[in-house]
Image (cartoon, rainbow, N blue to C red; front, top):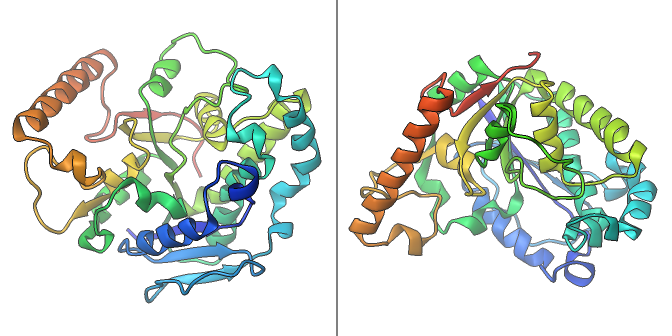
Length: 314
């Protein structure tokens, strides 16, 4: 199974108009993220100055101006919705304080489609440029679990990590109206799509946003939109990790070259990995009890895959 990673860095003035996070931090995180042992396609605004990138053989940098991103066609309407964001429970979220933020997040699907048209890779994995901030692990000391990536592709066109409530909603838990909640239905830091399904995913997302959100003056995150199309049965989807960990999918898709001590995970920070053995054992026991309960109640159709949510396939 061949996998290509896709990522991007754009200066949306987050440091001055958002939460203070600096564009320089993103390039530093990107250079650590690029150490993952898969080829990357990196989209950059040619107008943004940046330090040298730590690219590997096979990595490709594509200059694409911010003004050419397709999601910018929504900009005026999104900005108008955000001007009246007090109607939403999560109106203080960056989603509404900095409209350009989610316009960039929704561009992930356009980036996928662009790469899919010019790659021989069988699957594409989106990885936020800042993903490395969630773990201090040396990403070059990981390997891609190609056999697991192949199994995912055999069972679904889309693979995500999510908190357990996505599967709960699928199994009948009463669902609220999601737009305005900024609820983490899926973890958008990393998700995987079959290359042959990338264009359809982008089309389904765009149609959902335009028909179900913007037509009703609603707006939310790309993580919410992904969750909603999954629950609506628009993409056959594998949930590969039910976790609060933002890089949970990467923790399953990549494994360390060297063996780790009991209860340790590379996708955690050093403080978590260095917990006393008794605490790590307790966490493993707790996780297994929860997994056993949820597996008995809902079933696990494929090992290491928490659920397959049906939908049309490419």
